[in-house]
Image 1 (spheres, helix red, strand yellow):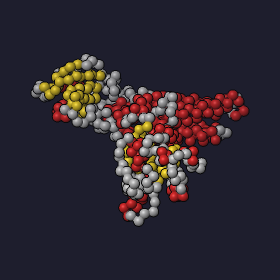
Image 2: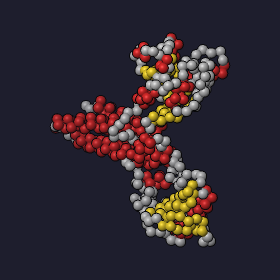
Image 3: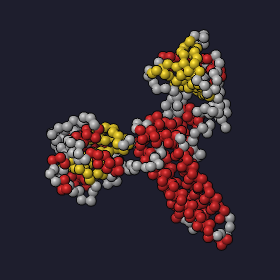
Image 4: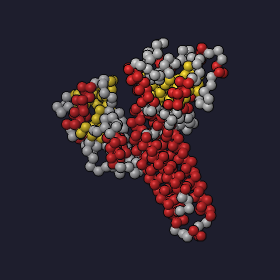
Length: 447
């Protein structure tokens, strides 16, 4: 069912700046008035039609292609047409102003997609994936966003919800009878259904975490003593000279950030000042920033000199790292070692590399992905946001609590209801209005 009495919105749907093509998108109930004013008449539905775009005096503003989509068979579910003309900023602004003069108003950020959601053309998870697809910086991120946009993530959520609904129906029917009248097979079926839902939820959560990593990336901090090769390693991983390299201790005095990709997974690598006692006030400021950065990391690479091994100073640094953040020991300068089997780091995971020659870098890249939680999945990942992860984790908590209160049918049924409610928030079956505003306000204008 379409939204009643919606006004007509218009916006430039292509990126800012000059381009070969510029698109004006219009949606709403006054499409015919605007179409007649600019084109003389609406073109045939779902056919590309070459037209002149005219001003109020009949003068030609531009020439291009028009696409008309009658309701409800359009992106928003409303009457929609698009003017595809030349991509100069001046001509696009004139054409947009002509639409506004004919009764449209300027669309708010994400308003086209919001209307698509409200008109049941997309669910909320699919709507968010539109913005994620636009913002994708890697091939894997784009593929993950497309999977979510095509409905794979939503289908997984709906499958979980349908399973919960069936289980709730079974439990409610069991509540209507005295315990002695409930067959043992009903209890076995209840337990089997619950276990199946919990397994599917865990699989969906794992896939969503992978998608969240593709969307947000992971922050990896390179830390260690001065002159162990932190800046050289950053340069080698990024493939360019982004950090100054010198034999003088304390050369790096501020945090240097560089975005890289490993197998399509975005990582934000940060080179930091060497950790040591110093009398230099400026260097101490850099060391203080290093310690602050360590607490915001998703992974810490503690870089060591392979020729010296794990020294007392390294052990002190290791002990002072945030305990709740994963860390990986990296021995640099293995090209200077005659016997690499001498590398030892106790029970801690480590890898040996040479930032100078590139030896061991491929193994390090694999260890990095493993340490930040990336897992290659045959079925692929879903592009997920933090709110999706929170909702899935909340549903998992309620299912765990349901398992713990199996002997109390009333409490068990309530936990199932709360789990279903958490999952429904992902696709929008249950969502606060202020959450909708927050989600769609982050879209670009014209989308």
